[in-house]
Structures are given as C-alpha cells and as structure tokens.
Image 1 (cartoon, rainbow, N blue to C red):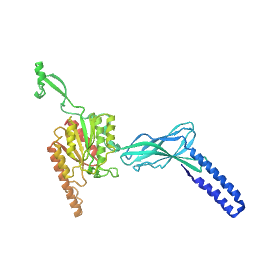
Image 2: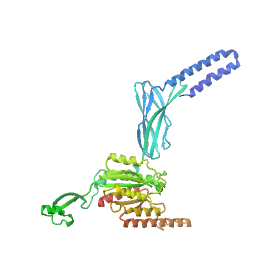
Image 3: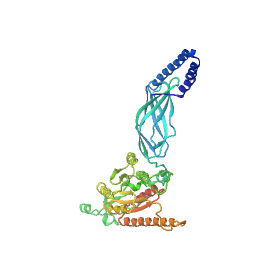
Image 4: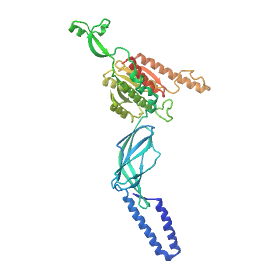
Length: 446
C-alpha cells in the first residue's frame, strides 16, 4: 500500500497548478505545459514504484509471550529483519490494546547496512491486569524522492501477560524478604516438640507416657520412646472468592486508581506465596464462585510460583453468589493432608455468612482455617467518630455500628468452630495476612 506524502502535494501545488493556470491564460503554451506536467507525473509514478519496493524483504517479529506488571513501565521488544541488508529508515507502529498505554504513536528506526536483524524497544505501561493480544506490526518507509510512503502490515502473534503489581507491597514488607542478620522470615523461632516422627530411642526418665512406642517396647523388651521433630514443610492454601461481592471497590484506595476487592485478594495471595516460599512451605491456590474455579496443588519453587501467578492474573469477578457447599466438599475430597486454609472472601451478606458457617463443619476438623475479609466502609463501633454534625450522619454511623456488630457476632460463631475470622483494612491486607501466617508457623498450630 502506498499513500501520498506532503512533499508530493507541495510539488503538485508548485508545478501543476501554476502551469495549468498559464495554459489557460496563454493557449500557445499548452503543449509545453502538458509536457512538463506529464514529466512530473512520470517521475511521481516511478517514485511510487520505488515506494512499493522499499518494504520488500522487511519483516518484524514480536515475542510470543511478553510479561509485564500493572502500572509499571515496561518495554516490548521487537525484532526487525532486513533481508536485503541495505540501509533503510522505517517508521514502526503498534495497535496496542486500550489497557496498555504508550506515549509513542510510532517510532523511527534506521536499519544499518550489512545487518540482517535489528532490535527495537517499545515503551509502554499496562493499566489493567489480564491477557492481551497483538496481531500485527505496521511498517512504513519513504520513496526515494519522498513523494510517497509505502506501508505494510506484518502478521506477528504476541501475547502480553499483565500481572499484579507487587512492588508496593514488597516495599511495605521489605524486612520480611531480607536475608540479613536476624531479619526475615527465616529467623522465626519455632517452639514445641513438633509432630513429624524422626526416630526411636531408649526411654529416658522424664519422657511422657504418650511418647512411648509400645510395639517397639514389646519387641525389644525395654522401654522405647518416639522422637519428634518440628515440621519444616507444611501446606498453605489461599482460597480466593471471585463472586459478585468481590467486584466491589475496597474501602479505601491505595494508588488513587479504581480497583476491586478481588484485585486486592490476588495481590495478597501472591505476597503470601512469596512468604511461604521464603519459609520453605508448600503453597497452593483455590479460586471459587458458584463453582470451584482453578486449583493449584501446593508445591514450592520458582516454577510453581510462576504457575500460581499465571493462574491468577486473568481472574475476574463473576456476577454470581458463592457456593460454599461445593467449595468445602471439594476441599474435603481433594486435600487429604492437614493444611492451613487462608480464605479471602466477603461475608458481610448475612445469608452468605450463614452458608459459610454451616458448610465449614466439613473441613474445620481436618484443616486450620483463617477467614479474612476487607473491612466494609463505615463498619465501626458507635461513637467512634465524634465529629458528627447532622442527623443523616448519625443514622449512617448507627448503620455502620449494626454492621460491625454482625461481623463481631460472626467472629464468635467461627471461633467456636475453631476458625479465626478477621476484618482487615485495605492498606494493611497483605501485611496482616502474612503476619497471620507467620504467627501460625511460630506457634506450630498446624
């Protein structure tokens, strides 16, 4: 495809229009004018042919998968192939999705002589988490005389994966991930005798009778005691609610942009995964709404963490109510080993809270359950705010107190069933979830 450039229009205005006017005024000059205009047309046509040949042997490649983080500056690498290896100047364009912004509409690159491949980095910033596609690269080059621009669309399949931005949360928890001195999660002191069997030894005065291995005692004819060690590798699962209530905005904004409760849950889950990796535990995921969505069995290692991140970066809330019965049944059947289950959900709906409490009995005896939700806006005890000036503000404050009271009652009900319930602030969600996990590890509640 070729398109005229401003230079062609300028020369057309300088040559064709004046001579055409001259031929109209002086008919005797018609032949000369026709020859000049025809010559100009021939030159323009030859130049147009050169524009069509300008992009022969030129192609472009995009990476098959490009990974970026939301709201963080990134670069998309392109490879340009110049098969003739002749010097050329190109303008390159990309039709980026609306969710990925860039200050550059087009970039100019000079292809050097004698080089088949050239590289170009396209600056961009993703504004939304998810999976986005790029299907083509647009190339443009000028004709030899600059009258025309040759354009070409090159098919180039590329998948852009935009992950949650964990940089802010990792800065807030910087001491947690350091490996210096007595700082970091590796320095936590674990108390107790542990539950993992290590070995047998002869009885020592002071050993408890429940530690005696009676079968070994009978075989050997003398008291034998079981020795236990602290469990070093445990399973931690984050159970993420992706139903309708998680599509709401959290109580307070962190970065000033509008986000959802589910977005905060995903960030907290990935940060907890980093903490579990640092502690040496196995980390897994379960997502659910009206059905169980994605299930990633607990493992450790960088490859496994990448798999967990890939399972979450496209997760979006659905306009359905959560089915806690199916979720708890799934957990009961699939998770045989005792594990720490960290629920990230929303239970400020009374019916949903009753359903969760009713179905919790399926898993509470086998697993340790921590239930977390973001604190609803205004759900605070009465008289917390002394600056109420109108009757409407007073009634609104009383409504918040009633909601807070219901959540406190739910906390007591769950506590009687062996589960811990907490309403966390938006800004402190990640830090509080990690603190809960480290507290469980330190006290060996698993």
